[in-house]
Length: 87
Image (tube, rainbow, N blue to C red; front, side, top):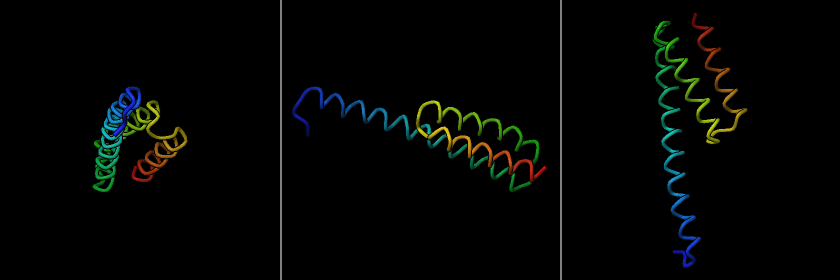
């Protein structure tokens, strides 16, 4: 355990940021999984709605710095490609 006051503060801040990052990453994975399930089922209307929410989640994660912007772009491209192949 840290002895210096500023070190203790940094530990607390790191824990909070870690929890926020986990929350956003988990929401991102859930949104993508729901979308991929709809695509696999062949439900085009539901997939279209879920594609929007998945892309929104990817953009939010990228804007918060949880994933890299190039990774976000790649994920959005691949999700859109899956939708286009299905339709």
